[in-house]
Length: 346
Image (cartoon, rainbow, N blue to C red; front, side, top):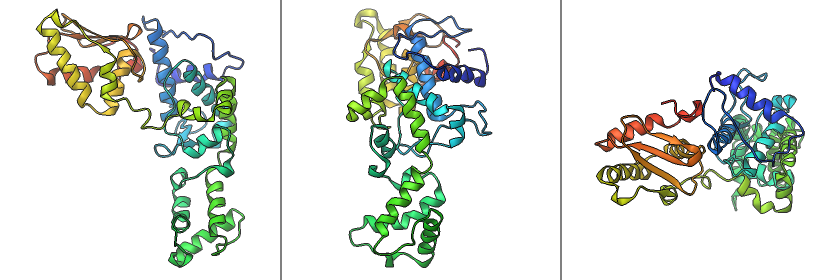
């Protein structure tokens, strides 16, 4: 944990690039330079892996911008540049996804439904592609007017301007299709969407499926395509509600005095009012990853320190010295997110 970000990421990448690992075996992690041990460390590691997979690695793998393996907008993410295929990065991504799933860890959220259709055993030709799945903004803007015409019950090509038709025809010729006509408009749209999305990610998807197969998760998806949303939930499905978090908490005994009662009220107010991102940060600080767990314990301690957490025991230790909610909130927010750099460093 004392190393810089690229060195840490390099170790993670090297681990998941190692061939012939039985990813279903019991998993234990240790943080060099940190005294923490136990299940909380493993949860922290898997959370870090999925976070990097979704938001990008800073390590230089041949791209000056780092390694963004998935790109696009929320719930329409697709695999990114083929440059990462040369390093088997998408095989690595499949292993990461499957490994986290096998150990009940965080999921990779926000993938395009069209991509999920193919990962679950469908074909690109039968996938329903949305305009938002196209990451090339110029191509999306060119196809957009034709998409609206074909989606409209009474749309026709007369609604397109001369400039729009010229742009669509130019794109069609570049992709080796015939120019736009009234009789082929929806056929042409289907093929333009296919090329704009799957024409550039077919090989990446093959690598991801190879990594998933090595973790046995692909076998599950092929046998139960309906399980795809369990492996790859949407952003909304991965949301943690305040009610769920509060329901999982084991509170101090009511007869422990006024201080624990006051701190309990502060924490309940924090959970009920903060943003979704901060709520996930709290849960991660508490148990090691963003997924609420049963028996999340709260202890109120006589201390002037900041809040601390024992992730292995799912225990949040809150000092009793706070007199106002604002002081409590500011102190707790200072601690959130620090688990990326180790445990107990504040």
